[in-house]
Image (cartoon, rainbow, N blue to C red; front, side, top):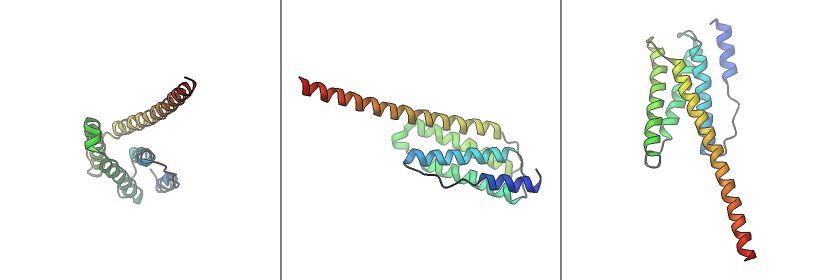
Amino acid sequence: MNKYVGKQAYRNSAVSTPRIEDAHGAITVCLDTLLHNLKILAEGPDQTSELYGKITSKCLTAIYILQTSLDFEKGGVISDNLFKLYEYVKYQVLATSKKEAANLEQAIEVVTEITTTLATSKKEAANLEQAIEVVTEITTTWRSIS
């Protein structure tokens, strides 16, 4: 990767200030940031470049935020498994800095799957809330009729 392409990729990686409305939104932003930067890292920027340092730092920061946001009491096994997946991704990022064999493509797949699952669960939760509102409305209407 030449120096210009690397700098341009970094400039393009700047995320505009996202609008975060809830905890899921914050996690989504972290996952999106992580995924974006993993993809740049997978392109193999020169390890001595400023781009490499910034991208690696962004990946590790996002992983740290994701890991510290887990609620092990409420999340139980799901939190444990997510923590392990984030550890795997972190190991892959760190392996690149040690010039060890890293499977960044697998790390990208892991983060993509987590992102997709979170988006699906958020939609299902919204549908469930709508269903509860409809049932509540029907029940209230039915009680007022009877």
